[in-house]
Length: 184
Image (cartoon, rainbow, N blue to C red; front, top):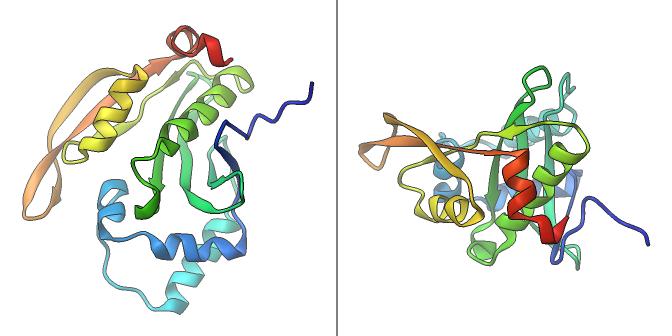
């Protein structure tokens, strides 16, 4: 039986292509705020230059950015890994979904596919994402998936005129294997 590590029940992950610039352009200020910050407006040329740089970025570790798309090839969002440390076997990830695709279960499937690959193909042993305390959907998702809340740094992010905390989550490979045994 053929398998595809990059395909789940409803989505698949793939490398970015030049046509994905429209997906990034569809991210509104709330998406930007949840991922990083709301930035100053950019010209189309400046945004295209940034996008081209991201698409052609040389990688010197296991960090990567995927586009998540439906099985019907509709782009939904992105997920990327970073701070990948092979020596310690740890990594982080961040994700963003276009507003019209949020709260439909895609984010959990995106996370599952990346964790399965990093734990079972690259021998990583722990993932440690963080979530801003105003991002209630992401907090709920990580806790529902079985992530352990490992810490909270107070007043680390400023948005909407106030400071918010960063909440750190963690999951080991052993925890992942137990939680998702029926899907492995």
